[in-house]
Amino acid sequence: MTTLKTRRPNRTSTWPRILLSGEAGTDAAWMAAKLTADPRLVASYWLEIGADVNADVYAAVPGADFDIIVHDGTWLDLYEQLSAAWDEAHAAAEAGLPSALVVTTMSAEWSMLSDTADRRARRREGVNLTNRGLDPDAAYSSEVPVDIDPDLWMLFGRRHRQLMGKILTWPGPVVLTAREQLKDHGRWVLHAKDQLEFDCTAWVRLTRDDHPEILSFTAANYHRLTKQERAALRPEFTLERLIWEWAGCNAKTRAPEVRTFDADQVMPGERPPVRLVHAAERPRPRPVPSPPADPEKAGDPLPSEAERVLHFTDAWRTISDRKLVPGLTQRMLTDVGDALDRDVLGFLSDQDKEALGITTRDPYSLRTLANTAALHVTTTGTAICPHAEVGAA
Image (cartoon, rainbow, N blue to C red; front, side, top):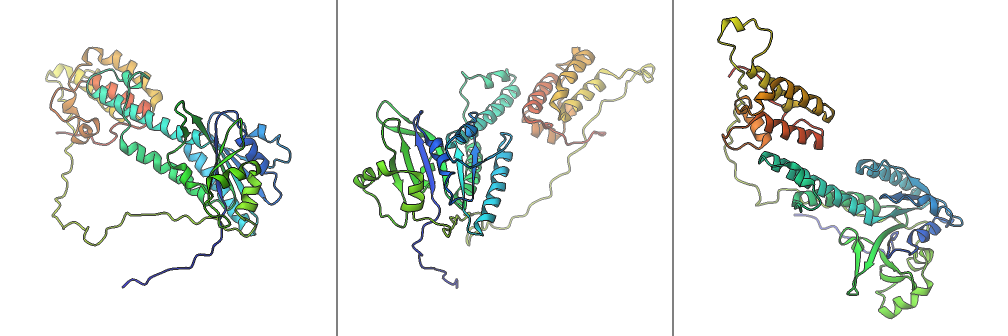
């Protein structure tokens, strides 16, 4: 029998995560830079995502004191640099010294992930078109819609949650900025990952012609604010007041504890019945062309056409450097230009056929193999089927 584990609530706040959203021309980033001047913060880190690099400009805010997190623009380096800053902030927090984090902008973060999902979907479509003997360039046309498969959205949604894992457990106040647009029908649209506002302690909308509007705010010192109460706070709003007064934070405030939920376990009643699984057959070796029947040609230093076709079949199967594609194409046109439509299906193993998506016994030409492999290595940087061995059939 499982022992019940409980605890009593402590009625204390954690460091707030504040989302500042608004239309163009508002001062969200300027407001965040002003927060970094607060002497109660031991350090402040500024993470820029997107093409607009303006953090250096906001250093002109009187008293602003922050370090810009430098990354090369790739998701891996961006995440690793944020993780390194997260480690530094937690080390300082153990001594009771909080650090702030500013992220500009969450709109650019989701745009970056969405654009990558679109590019990968178009690569898939390009390979599909090539396998069907069609021009793969159509997949990259802006006028051709391409569906993004659910597995890609799952992948990039997971990357967003990976980044949010560091943001939500940051040991100090966090300020996120995002673009928001007022549509013609009077509805505001937040340009960021859906439900981002639910990950934030406070959501504040900034407009050019009015005081900041507090859309939501959760703190131990405040009950659920009514519309009138939120309106009364608008003229008084500053990030410093929200963090230190309204949220009641101080040097002893703890970092939020966010659990990583994992449902990847086999529960009682879910285990499938045991079935006999036969060992997979070892793939047969790939065939090679027979030697020339004419004895006089046996000593000919020039290989036969079949051998040259096999050579280029292997070359396209295993090419993994996109820089070598033009040279290999030129050599193929020179050596076997008249045999580009030669069927190479007999030179391909079962593993090769699976990697190339071949499901029929229809002829598969060297030209088709070259086009498919060239597109694959250009877009992925990897060989399309690097396995299989050459041997006697």
